Image (cartoon, rainbow, N blue to C red; front, top):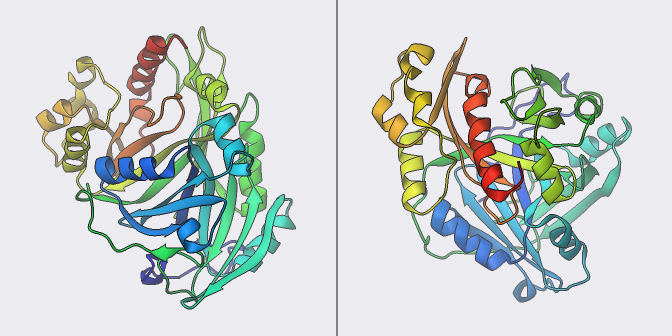
Length: 375
């Protein structure tokens, strides 16, 4: 049974685009088989479904990986002249689809397109012996798309066209639970345009704003705004560069991704100490935070349930807001281009995004940029 079939489906009547959560994230990659092995071995995902030549799909292969409520789809082209190949050639491995789980894909498509969204795929019914899935897609920043997925009448492994995979897991899960938020990078002066898109077209609300005074170092800066849907299940921070002495991380991303796209995916855990220790043991690389960050950490954030020495040893960041505190850490890019990376986050009540950690985080990113010769 799919993850979605096990989750509740409540939505507010006043929300014209009620979202039930993130359905899946599809990445276009150069070699899906090898990428799937990396995510299984390092992150503890399990392959649950597959499509490709063996299932009658002739132009691509896709592997569905799951852990907790997170569902990643890794897709590679089997032909040199395809949309997937073109995407990988231009961007490298990256997120193509931010899929949103809905009760009514047709209505979601109609409501967003009449408000100005550009259509990618009209509502389409996919069916097999397990039922039917309705999908429809619209454009967002860069070449990224949102796909509305209605799966209330489906009981298969993922969706029609895929076959279930029932093989033993390569490695144990590391405790990842769900997608907390997905961050997009856009070009100079484009942040407000895309914030307005989410407000006007998808009915999101502006949750938080960070300007270049909040997110800056001696050398670089950026600006960010966070939009969220009505029930808070889906949050999209959107970044743009700001003027600084040197090239910001957003500019570096835009250069290497060749345009706007998804910068990082934040995934939640209930035990960040275990999750990060296990990821490091398996070879996942994280940004290094200097020891000076931890000198007055307890004074800055107060008491926490976790051991401060373990937090320091694992290089985890901590921040507190009015509702509690959070712990977070960021991987280095998971491909050779300095583009997509992951955030591991544990929330102890806090609903913010670690504003108190921005300076230490971005100085760490700048050190990596300098090593790459891109600062």
